[in-house]
Image 1: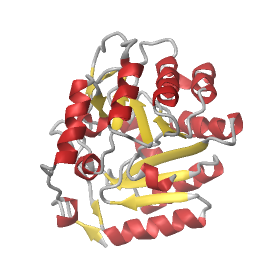
Image 2: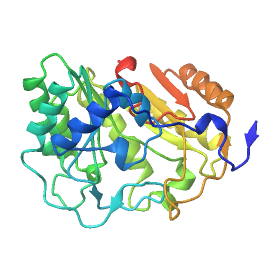
Image 3: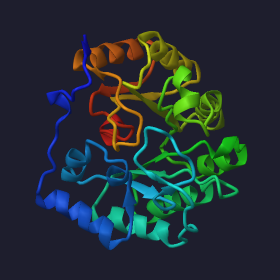
Length: 283
């Protein structure tokens, strides 16, 4: 069932004012860390913070790319902070996290795209929070195989690289990215180390057709993607691309069943789903 552009009730959430939510927010501030939860205006920030989890955003909060759907600021970022991995691990330890998700802005200004700092964060977490699982959500590193190898050798449990949008919309909405390169990254993860779970995700509601969605899922399945997230696009700012339609929860349920039938090991699909949504439970 197609729904109009007026935001439906199932997308309306409120921020809680609970001790657990405030503790996560205070810890991030105290350790001088960013979270993609805040920077990207994730609709699940209430649920995740209330449950004591957060997705850490490293390498600053200014992206060198300008994707038309994203709320993260773009421009000229600051130099990487060498102390960031230690502060991230300290925050994870203080919050008693057992599953940590680390992502970053895209840093095309760096020779390795920030891969080295990803590896340092993984190593710091392994040292300061023994036994925790680590998931990284990485950019494309401009296709640099050595950069991806640096991340793989740090042995995270999950490597996620999001497709974000279907192939026909990719050039317009992700003009500095490449659809086939992103698919290749998913395939490389599988070939580099079969013990590391590969993961990807995308949004709907940007003007794609149903067949476009199926084609994207088939491409990811062929690339060996293990986990998949599918969520509803919501326009974060006035200057972002507008929502073309809102998908009904029943449509997400149908997409989940189709994806599972393609062989994905785990699928999260729903209006409020984002790439790190219930990531610990999936593991």
